[in-house]
Image (cartoon, rainbow, N blue to C red; front, side, top):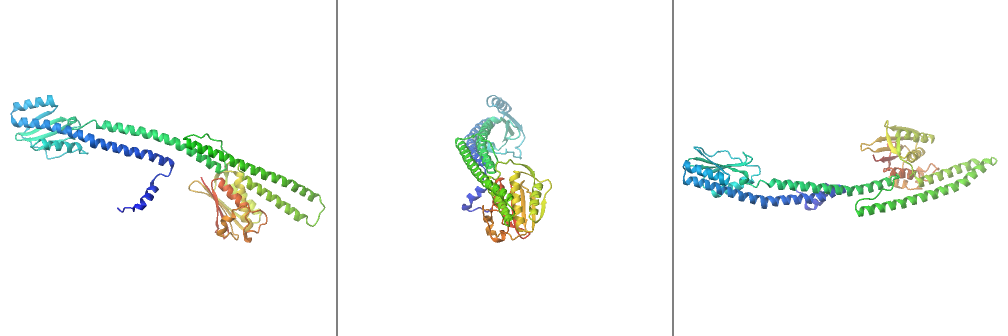
Length: 447
């Protein structure tokens, strides 16, 4: 196995650690608890359980050595009966002589082998004769056999004489304490992370322009302070937006008043040579006022609702056709998305109108993304925009080179309004080269 260089280990570990606050907080709690429990368990088995087991095994081996030596001193049936009676009464050992037998060839050992090693070590120290033992056949007893000239001396001893049998209780309480500790930690961390998640959801909703009630901050003191600061900032931003919208609406109203008087005077005036040109200028002024107000307002107060993408694109296509372009619509059947209808209609109409103004053929398409999002494209066969000027095209009031300035109507807010609407829905608009040879505007919205 090839090891990573020391300099790459931090990056390797970072990629495999949880990225969420919930996961990292849980790891901070779980990892020390697990390390502590493993250390405590190891210390218990190494310093206590094995020591106690070794001492018990040594005591049992001493009793067995007494029985073997007592029988070796007088191998008569009468002495054997005395040894059996004393062993049963004083040591809880069952001693039996099996005449003519030999030790079994099969060796049976436990899975861990701790008891077997301790007992074998003790018996080897105490006995000079060959012996055999089995700690696995009987759950509550240990079978020990010692070779004698007359046969095999078999001793059945209670298991607790050779091993500390209550160790599992300690392990059980350790596991219960670990589960309780981790359960309390998980509940506490979940509550703290939930407060941060609510704050993130509120910030995301505000970024999409959705109106939400002021939520009550909860969680740790620092989280409540951050939530309160966010709500204060949100209120300040909303007041600024409302003031800007009110100012531009007032300016729009003030400009419409003299514009209306000019229209009325022009309608009542006798026909003259420049009348049509003046009407065109007033139409353009009114369109400019509408664009200024739409850019400032952005339909932020409009509620989102499910709309048919097919109907949306067909409506935008009709507007583009009135500009003289041939329009093709490609959309999946039954495609529905939750959007702010007027705002998104304005965005798509701006893109389609922009494409129709600079190309003869326009294609509008939409499809659902595997991630659950939505992708819409508006393409044309016009002159396009150089790649290094794509971001410049989104700047408010930006008027690009003459190849894209054939349409005199407008003030350079179409793409800016469209991107503002897309970002208000959590998505974005990017520009690229169309397969038709012109410009492609790609709208991506999250699911």
